[in-house]
Length: 227
Length: 215
Length: 99
Image (tube, rainbow over all chains, first blue to last red; front, top):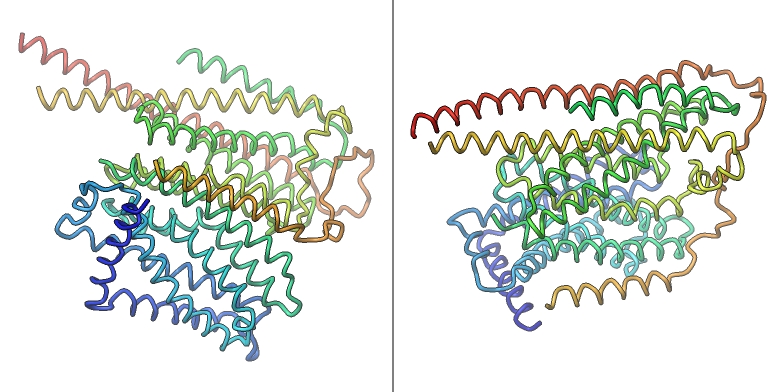
């Protein structure tokens, strides 16, 4: 287990180091997420007030869109100088490479989500800060589910034609249950009379989704990445 | 080939003969005889696609890949049948073409997953067979979530207990339903076999192309 | 084999957590979905929307889709078999020439 985590950590550290040279992915993804929130705000605000339930939806749409956007470059970088082949040829468990990449994606998405959640709370007067633990739990679990599937598909498509277009096409339908659970859970928490029972159910569903799809991703990373 | 043709022709009068048996509840409910078997077969196709994709990924058997492609195409086709007959029924029974209840939404999602599978195979270039297999596997894994969501959301869709109780509650309807169910299953198997055969012939043609190029 | 063990543990934990979560909604409050079909003899007169065209359209679509697909398989199969025929001729022609 030690060497597995160590490899994952090394991969993640490499990604962070590359990112810290230019902060390109972080800044572009952040900016995109914020513009997303603004664009959707214009769509859903009537007479100066947001439509009921819009806040939760906008939060999660921003998460989904910016997540998808950041997944592409994550593996695009590996295409140069055959870095991807180097990673795959390394004498380590491939699943560890996958987990390392996943941690990197999770970190990026978490930072973006914090910013977006605060923004949504401010713009829509949604009690997101008030129910911090609930919203965090939902975001973390939703994040994990979305990122597991996303990292796998991004890796799969790294060497494919039309990869930029195909990633959203493949990703959104599969992660729909996680996104729906996230939105419905958030709605249950921030609505006028919060329904914590319902929120707990959606959390459980998310956990289940994560367990199953993370496992599937770990299992299929190896066979899918072989030529 | 002849065998396939014969079975096909046997099906057509079978379906027609099924119709007169149907019974007397509000006329539009008769769509049920095609709608429900259509969806059942679609789920079957999804499972076939998912399982053969897993076999292809982990055992690399080419037959598994052909079966997966065939089943995915059929999942899309039967999904189209379900998604078009459903709204026609809904328009009459509920007054609207579409409702965002859980089962419809998730069925739409499943359909989209397998359309994505076909798009990936068509436009993904070389190596997309493995990737598509991964997608199909994930698609299949999503099915339980479809079922769970049905039971949590408010839903005006007839519940899943209608069919098992059909024999007891409305015997006049049970016969034609079974008839149509069998008809759809036979249709599914026929089309699956034909489609797998198509893939096998294509593979053979490619092999011959390669032989020619080397020769 | 670390990965399968880890994932198994994860799944079991997830299951236990979900089991402990309890009833999310008072089931009685939900609108009850239709439990069974009830055959009736007469449609209430307020049913204005004519059902027959919808029904016929639905069945027609099913037939059209099924036959369109079968025809498309047929067409593709014929094309591939033509190719196959040509190719095997050429291959055996090659073989004859080289022997």
